[in-house]
Amino acid sequence: MQRLAGGFQAAKIFLTANDLGLFLEIGAAEKSPGELAAALSVDRRALRLLLNALTALNMLEKGDHGYRNHPVVYEHLGNPATYRGAIFRHIHHCWDSWSRLPGVVQTGKPDFAAEANALGENDEWTRDFIEGMNDVTRDLAPQVVPQLDLERAEVLIDVGGGPGTYAAAFQQFWPELSEIRIFDLPDALALGRKRLEDLESASKVRFYPGNFEIDPIPGGADAIWLSQVLHSQNESGCQELIRKLYAALDRGGKLMVHEFLLDDDKASPVMASIFAVHMLVMTEGGRTYSGAEIGAWMKAAGFVDIAVLNVSDDTAVVSGRKP
Image (cartoon, helix red, strand yellow):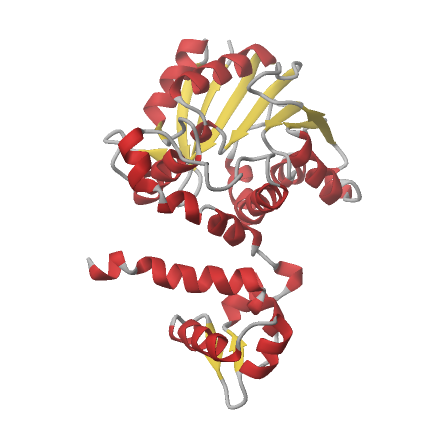
């Protein structure tokens, strides 16, 4: 229990180092505390303590003349070409909201009074959220997309897929698709356009700005991909969105919902259960759901042939067909 209670300390040490740009500053070199303190404009004594703690956590290695990144840390956080630090900046942005969990449990409502951290209301928060989602999907999309069944699909809509990572993977692994449409908020689409506009691997991708909560979903598709969106919605919001997606699909079209799925007992697995609490503190009514819940909403909307496919260690896809 002591280790569990003190887990925030190691997390804060790591997240602070990432925010400072420490791992990028070290890069592939070995650097002394003095060099790093000068480059990062921080206190040398304080930084030395942080460096030693990161070494104890196996994130850094201590040499004769300074500190160097562990090879895994260098690959993900020290090398600009393969950098994945935005997702950890996003997690750190959520720190204050998590610190107010006791009050959220008492009231049942998130407390955003201390910071403007809603998507679209804070530029830094929004940028790190969008780029962080891209960090995650860059590794996950090549694993997930080949497992899907899109043999009969020609036009696919990625709802909420602004960064374009899944869209590019769909074109790569399912070349039979004639068009891939991304429907998302303008800020998210801006990142996608910037990333994909010059890539031959994304020549079939088109961008459709909109808000699925208030705007209709573009029609004329025979496949819809909805990845990590439902958990941000309350139950009625999930049902309404699934009905919208049903209306947007052509007959015979397929809906694929990708999520952290809870087991039927709602208390496992660990990742989905903890993420439900994350949604408690970060949204107005979101949580994680079970495959049975999502499947029931799809059935109520009119979908048939509903199935659940585990596609990664932590995620699964619930799919259904519009008759």
